[in-house]
Image 1 (cartoon, rainbow, N blue to C red):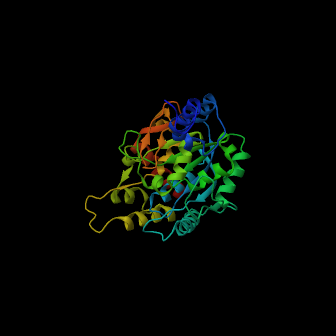
Image 2: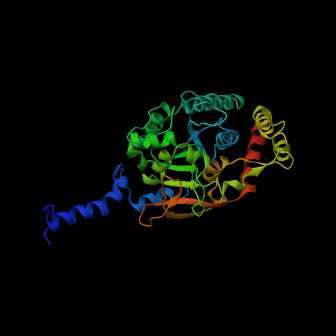
Image 3: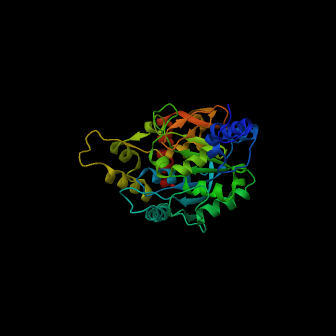
Length: 337
């Protein structure tokens, strides 16, 4: 039968191949990242037994768990050298915009340093004033530029402890993709891979930045909320027992914890998620993790599986008592000094 459009069968087959085979893959070509070999990536993902250099990226005023995490990192000098702290954007009932959330986080970081009597120049940096809108529009900020500078000049892996929306970190990767050779991202974000949905505050705040972490090939350790960090629950009674009277920082943490409890707080407990990323660097033995193919984070904020993708590390268990015990002990010891 004659082709009414006078198009040869070979041409029709070519068009069909493009439409059916290549177009669904188009998003995969929307951003080029450096290629890491799997042996190199796995070596970077091997838990360090030595003291490591870290930067902390935190939406500190978002609620109250980041404060505990920042203090925990700063009081763990035997395990980590904190080189900088970055204020991350957030938007909830404690901010009127991502920029406002970032500025409030910046102020809260400085408040924590004051209560710890820590003074360092060029140590706290403002981050993004918005969330990512597309891969071709990374957000330049003092935090992103400092991360790029520190990573590219690091003589070993720089651990990027990411406690909020990963906007600053993703922007740094998009601005200078070569940093994926130099950093290891430890991110509290998303839910476990077997959960029905990936939806979680940090991930949902900036889905595009979250996709960058999963897609770029950067050595990534994901610490999901449910069913992992959701075990990091504590109570007013426990916090007051171990931290009340333990210096300005201990009393401040007790204060913000008490202020956060609801009016009808009978039987109430609060999860302090963010200390998990700090604890992983302090003692990876407190965690069970596994190496998996990096999931595809869909636009519907669910996980899709492709076992041909690059590898990453994901936590599936943590030792709650060991982590809180170490945190409380370090705050008490700091009070003694």
